[in-house]
Amino acid sequence: MAKTISMADLRGKSDEELGAFITTTTKELLEARFNNYTNQLVDTSKIGKLRRDLARAQTIRNERTHAAARA
Image (cartoon, rainbow, N blue to C red; front, side, top):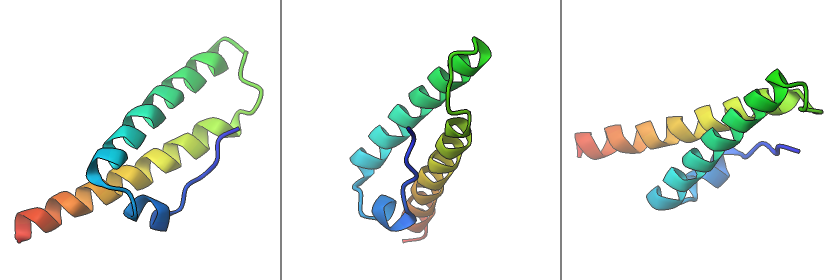
């Protein structure tokens, strides 16, 4: 079952950990979409949860990128 992660938890991660989280979440989302297409996904809300987690992580990464560019 997909757990949602809070923004505070994501902000506490380093850049490498955040990149790894984005990579694994992207892979999980692709797998969930495939399982949904083949009618093997039991919890269809997992797709939405993974999409939101991925969006949160990408938002944090973009904030850090823009902050570094300003500095």
